[in-house]
Image 1 (cartoon, rainbow, N blue to C red):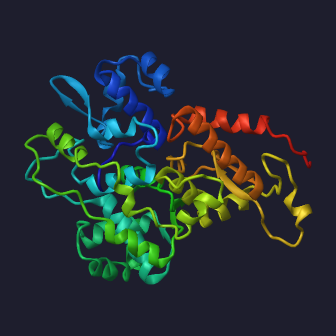
Image 2: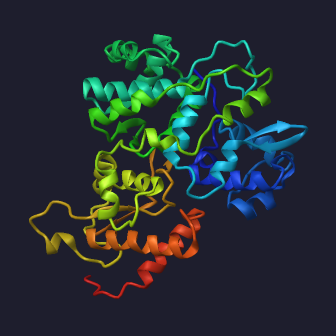
Image 3: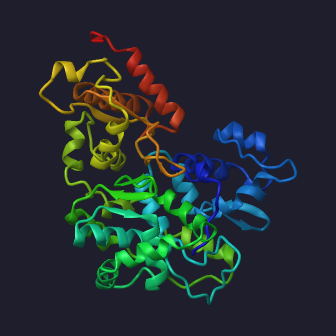
Length: 395
């Protein structure tokens, strides 16, 4: 299987990468101390006393194309510069690019050579899932199936869609092959799949990947997924810079319509204008599979803002509550261990949900921002809204 970096999933979360990128644009990550890093990023950077943060976490930064070494310094890349600017890049935009740029072998890890024959495992995984949804109308796949397909087909990731259609027809065999892999062989690859499961139309549930897309949207995304190519650099660090240099801040225009109603829902939701970060935010909140999973485990019918008991008020309706995503607008859904986490979601009635988005618009405009700078600020603004609620508390 392909190599990744295991045990550091928290540092691969999009908001963590934003904070690390901001740090990398101001400081040399290679010489930074743990206390300094924690003060500016909020992340622990846990490591033995004998190990520097750079020694333990440089693989994370390089795999994510945030830094490369040049002249003995950890230089921020174009990716870092874009991620460090709130509202410039969304989680989906970045992770689609990372899937298109990540290779097996990777220049972030030992073993890469300029003449190495590379495959695109994360791109392969996305294309396999999208083809399966578009052609077979099956939205659910297991990680074992994806790993078995990667091993048995030998597909690079840039083949014609017809080759992937042929591959998904053998999905039963792939599931068996994947289940026969020992845990040591797949644990790093599994970690990388968890990382891309932050994409807004994906949902990780007990090591199954679920797509919240219709067939048309799946095909639309598929057509925009192409590997990052070009003449390879002569060494690993230069190759990291070359790949990162191809990232553009407007790439999500190719992916902005995965939820057919996202653009129309922007104004209806209470957002004044339909920037890409607001559309991305709404895609998460409209993820039907995520909603179903959330309400299976959170059965309270109360709105988190006004405490309206929607079950008592609307007894004929199965579910009236919306889901609100508490993280910055550009963020994806966080993943922990085997599943998507629900820690960043709250149930709200439709009226309060629209009011939240309008409150966000006013706050961002007043601050001159396109997005919340970090998770802490996003949660503070939400709590300020709750504190300012002047309606009746229904409970």
